Length: 345
Ligand SMILES: Cc1ncc(COP(=O)(O)O)c(C=O)c1O
Image (tube, rainbow, N blue to C red; front, side):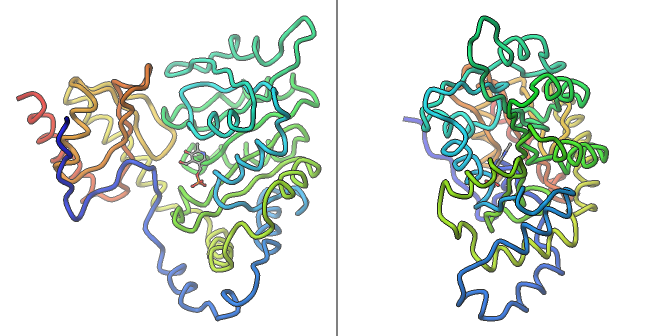
């Protein structure tokens, strides 16, 4: 049996793509909350209206959910009839496939690890001929775990061609992509065939609060609302997410991550690893040694990264979240050096 690695008390958690630490403004807001947020059943209305203003859509086109995970669950229940085809590019965020399959959908994946998005292969499956029903296509932009972004032009083409057919776009890491991505998100929200998924867990740094949202056609949003309970998010979480939205995503953190992505990739490459160019807050890397052994050695050095043991495509790769702080990046660098030496020994 493989021995369980020792975990340092102050582990550097770089395995779940979490965002920046809580900003002082949000800490103050937390301390100012009165007991009514706890006594009363929570209302999503204010946050939904604020998101609607942010995306320039009517409020009945927005649904606040218990994280993106809950949005996917509601989507699978409300939008996917049993036997419905779902088309993904893979590898991608695993919960999408699991949720769709649990709802009885048939999921097919088009492989896209690196290089440009495989537009022709994807379009071929998205628009089948001979009267076969079109699958529900869902794209993740930037993608997790690769950090790759479907080109705007390509996504636009697919959406235009989809006509009235609904297409999902997950923007969980959208704030980390280039600044134009925010404008592109507004363009997507304005379409009547697009269902967007978003979250406060990443660039807003609020993963522990469990707040996500969907923006889409009003009948789809109404069906997703009815697909599970009316109070998915706690009142305190709603109030903090609203304050965070008013502040905007943490720009200093986003800028820092943009620099760190390159620094981390350069460091990894100096050790002989390969890295994919990323538009998110993490880097997918193929180390020059066994990936799982390296992940275990890093754990012993007090650094947790994401490994993919057992995954046919991803087993040789590791996903490392950018620490978002110079000292922590240095600590990661030292841990990497020590762990690689340990594995090579
Ligand atoms: C691509 C993607 N979408 C959605 C989510 C869901 O995040 P949450 O449920 O924390 O909002 C994640 C979480 O890692 C993700 O990577």
